[in-house]
Image 1 (cartoon, rainbow, N blue to C red):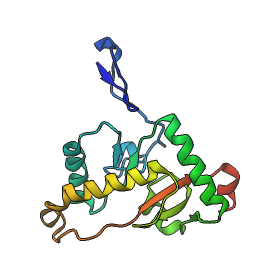
Image 2: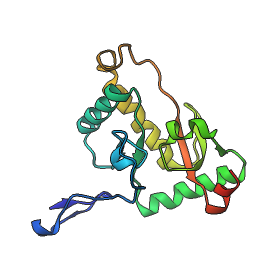
Image 3: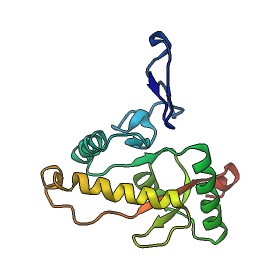
Image 4: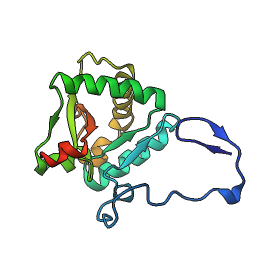
Length: 174
């Protein structure tokens, strides 16, 4: 049995399963721990166990002092989130980060316009709100290990970032 990233469990022959390769990432960026050089450290699927997520994030924090997490959404969830992101774009809420810091905040090879998801801010999209709650829960999971990992206690976190990929014509303007 193989559990797909969007949830369903399917039966497949063992010889039909292989390790993911390439992941659609630009070649030649293996200089970091980041998954295949894709610009993120941990891929968060809905069925991921809190313990495995805690371990991966803790290791990343120990090695580099920060962790970039990418979340998976179903097609239906993605449609609603994209609508909310486009609404933010139309309102002028999304901005392009300065080139010097963009890679460090949202990962390599991912030019995007972003909006900070400020704590306490009312988000228009249920899934974005759920993701913020998940990140808060994860912060709680690693809080007890923060002093060993980072040399200090964990008392706060950077707000989440909503990133909307740039269209080809938008990237040329940058």
